[in-house]
Image (cartoon, rainbow, N blue to C red; front, side):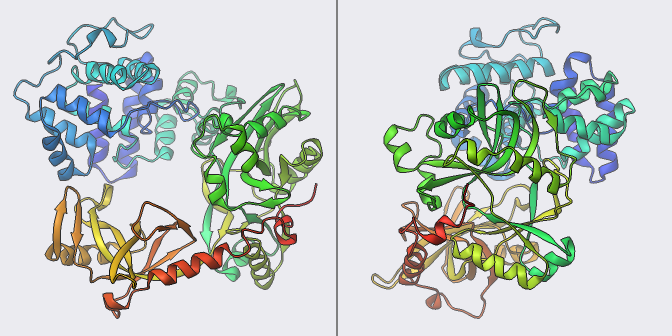
Length: 590
């Protein structure tokens, strides 16, 4: 793992993508066979392959406690190191390097018997020896399978005690899912191609089909990229859409004729089914089947095998329920019957990614144009087979900017977020955010708020105060009440300038968070207002972003809590009457 970490450091030290690719290709081409797959996966900042969505079940508290024990430092000392770097991995490396007796094979973990065993085919573990890449992979698997925080911590501490500071830095970075070395997944694919002399598009396709960059590296090494196959129940990355607001620009980019679908306020999901088995996967590729048993049960009755892309919506009596209703179902691994009855869910399909006869071979459809995939989707007759649990997205055609604006207004009238605008000739590109699909959204409204708290940023914004907590005024009490937090919308120059101001006008410090003089006014755009106990106002903004600084306004001129409550009431108006003609029209019949 030491050599892997040294390569990661060299990759981090250069800004040239060609050099990053060269360094990684040289490493992958020379790494021992047993280490190739996990080492490649680690360079994507994952403990497991993308298609392997096993949760490690570790958090800041467990990691911090374990590091404190192994490094013999207090939580406060670790917190101070974190404040210096805004990076837990770097903080861990710092405190381990500062320990006088730091060395591979330092103090034994509190339960050395819980340490992972050797990986088949790898050299046996030598107590006190630095961990190899396969041994780190085995430790990650042992952490995932361990039951309870104490058992997970014991495995982690056994691993950490064998690491030098640099290796520990990157072990923690991988666990946290953030390498921060400027290595995009596309560069990892390019490095695999360069390491083994294979065509880059072939590597990219193998990664896309398998969802496992480590497996793709092995296939490239063995000259078997052509054998990569799409596997059911290993979720594909979702195709992404680029944001757009201007109708004329959208038509100019995708036109002359574009397809539109309502952008539903649900959660993106992928349905896989084969024979009597069906599973649902979320946008982050986790299996969420248990959360939506009624959809999974209905999917078992479908007469084909394959993969659908779509949206899970709370749907009752033909009407779409607000997202707040759907939220009650999220994260509930075994929703009780009462909740299933209160918030029934349906799967709205808008694409088919693979299909085949029940019990037969499944054929990928990703390269087909959207118009052909839609025809295949409609031919599956999912709404007839499982009415009420399955629907097709509402499809409309626009040939001008005026058409697009009209359809957008109709979608918003149906209480949807906006539109998905698609090129009917576009292929499906997993994990890519191209311009074949555009999402047309406009802010519901804006609020003028005053910044009351700031926090040190992360990544490229380490060292500046970029995370703003903002408030509105409660006229009944004369106090400022928080309503949200945002860190996007301002330029680097604006953030740097405001950082200097906030530094000079800090009232109190609480770790990384600072209470500041309430004087900086920002215009905040958002999509939805929700009731929330998280903020003192009793409300929260969904997808808040800073539209602009309002240097022309004083803190006394910010919007009031009554304004927020009025906007919320307007949003709720009509949403409580769910079974209406407009709500029913939000999905096609049958």
